[in-house]
Amino acid sequence: MVYTLGTLKGRNCIITGGSRGIGFAIAKLFFSKGANCLLISRQAKHLENAANELQADGNNKNEGTVSFLSASVGQASFWKDFGSTEWIAERPPDILVNAAGISQEALFMRASMEHSEAVVQTNLMGTMWACREVAKLMKKKREGPASIINISSILGLQGGRGSAAYAASKAGILGLTRALAAEMGPMDIRVNAIVPGYIMTGMTEGLKTNQKDALLGKIPLGRFGHPSEVAEAASFLALNEYANNCVLNLDGGLSAHL
Figure 1 (cartoon, one colour):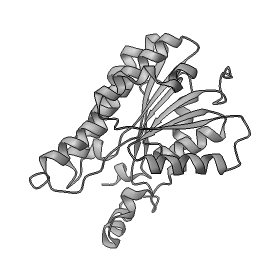
Figure 2 (cartoon, helix red, strand yellow):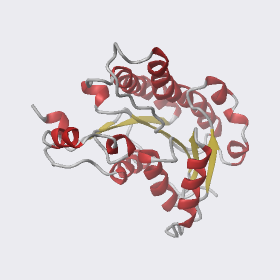
Figure 3 (tube, helix red, strand yellow):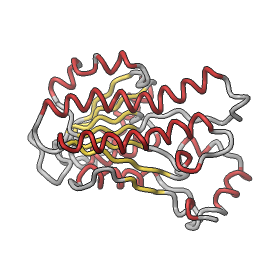
Figure 4 (cartoon, one colour):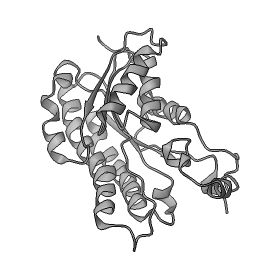
């Protein structure tokens, strides 16, 4: 299917971390708009459940498809071989969404080196390798504009107690986004980022009541965001063909709190 300019119908979208949370919300919206979605995550069972939910939703009237691939995105070896997968042969990518991530809740001096390394490897290096290898495929396709959307975090801007490796990885994603926007713009590959604040996902569900209350007291809108609201931002970035090096802050005003 040839995609229609200005819509997601027929677009080939790769979404890492697409089985849960923000990644799944983006997959759900893109799929409902007729995109062909490839979900990538570590847990095969979560991917299967996500794909089944999308296909059973009944809201997709635009002939989009959904597939999934179980892999660890932080492994460079996976991305080196990614271009030879069957999905890529049939559907060269138009859009890449890097939403895969590992959280952290431990003071830096107490966090294990192994976990801190895994956080950076998955969050930052996984995004970096995905951008590198998928951009090669996008450039080779040469059929209209392409889009890369990286999911960062407010902690990448402000830091946060107990999240040193996570904050560092998310700050790195913003630096990567800016550098690639300059490098890849001339190739007609736009690179943008979304900076979510506290969103209602598994990461926030684990917060204690007093922690949630303290955070809500700092958010001017008085609530956490919904994954669907981040998905709408991703849709905007995927479709707006002048958006390059755009960083969308979706934190309910938290970063403006003094």
